[in-house]
Image 1 (tube, chains in turn green, blue):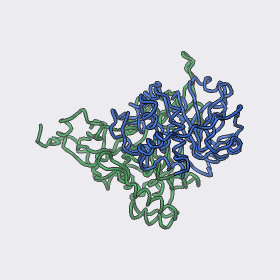
Image 2 (image 1 turned 90 degrees about the vertical axis):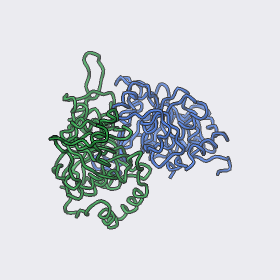
Image 3 (image 1 turned 135 degrees about the vertical axis):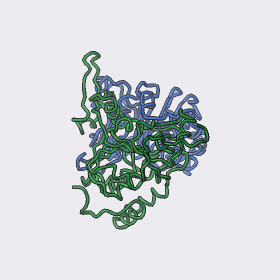
Image 4 (image 1 turned 45 degrees about the vertical axis):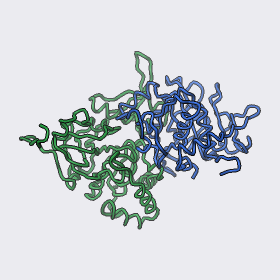
Length: 288
Length: 260
């Protein structure tokens, strides 16, 4: 196998072009995206959603910043399900903050562990996953139909039930993928992403580069996601920018600072956003 | 450089670091410059066995500096292991092997509950904050929670939170026990003082005032009734060695981002 390029030999080629990826995400879908704050968010994918004017999405982003802010600025979201949304040392996410304060986007706050539990329940095919986390806080009451307190009759222990959360689509960014869907993050660091991948109906992987299947066969212990769980593969070099795809490139701090500067004035921001992300959205076209 | 040979940020870092015992196994979340500095300082001084998982991901790293994000890979250099997924990480926190986490909040109440979600009504907030992230989780399961704040005033230290993002002692004595939860917040280190929690009432109690700060000044800057018992000793200032170490461990001064 070594050295020779493996042919598909009748197997389905999962590679699709970046500019058609938005067509895989119908308006109104529940979309989970990977990434951890300034790290490895599928930003090229988010840009495509903005450019295609996808609407009414319910985005599930456990710890995000720029990705959620782009999708809100682009008018793509009806609802954001999240644990944390910020630019960290670069400040609050400006469009997220404004949309939450004006009510333009519904913000449903969970927490990191409870969202992971909800993904795990969906993957396991059970109605809820129990956890001690979240107890005694105001968070569960924000969505009592999705998180509720229970008592285990045998042990007498109280716990929070996290209802199964099944995204229609999960999108994660990786360093390498092949046409069969095998995908890897170098080094293997998949944080919240892996649980979203297991829970979702459809999985899209955006990759810094497409490599031959032989590369995966040469080091199978380094594969992060098996090809059978990945439905579509997209080549997206620097596809995490301006977040990092560690260790190949870091986050673009200058971009975060410029974005914050621009966000102080609506007109300036519209021009900045159009230049870097996609076509500006007329105010009237925003979601209801 | 202040006349004393140290800055306020260095005093706060040193005060938090001294609270951390040698068996600390800590991890950190977003925008946690003061705790990260304190973990590094404690490890370099009285707590050589302290283990810190940077960003909850990188176990026992040796970063040359602290960057703009405490979730940044720049903190992971020299790590002995990466927790490679949330599922890999969480059970270590839930079983208590990772025993220490630090919270700051836009609002903090007398029982050490914290709010990082909204100011005002949740559905129509005056200010939408970043969100609790892991606060709602970690306040329940991590046995040792340390609070810190660089804005000790009546807007931060309030009688009633607008939203309880993270659990401290809840509504007071017995609250955690009623949920089957152990532990709870140990101290709160601020730009004015160090507070602990009364063992029975679980309310915040003034333990030390920083050099130059008066007790009445702290009481006035606190929006809830702060317990004051007898003479309140001064917070010991950082030693020359501690100050030098802090400046080596955080050469870019990331800790000062919390004082802007």
